[in-house]
Image (tube, rainbow, N blue to C red; front, side):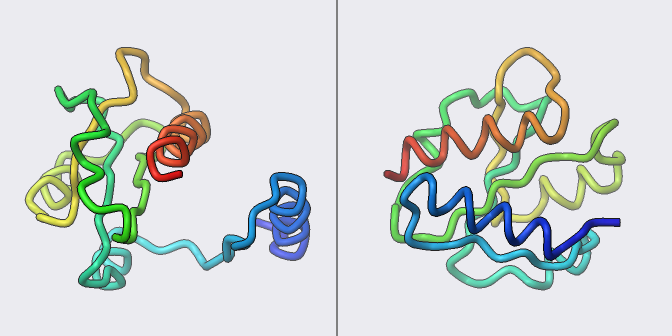
Length: 120
């Protein structure tokens, strides 16, 4: 259970503190199928994949005007079936966050820091 009001307040305060003009929105959690159906034409999903050999995220940022989505796995990683679906989808671009296996929330923060650096 997530207290959405508290989460929104934290997001607004964090955005103000870091001088962000765009405040991220809180949306309900989606399962993989719902997420795939929600993708738009301009979306590029950067998949933090512990099995990826690509450790150069700069190669995946082709056009800064596109909408980049960071996608990291749950604790214990994706199931083999989920991985197959993800890797077959041409919107997903696989990359590695390094040799160490990170917790989901740490992987998300590390990926966001890299994206922010490359896009800004």
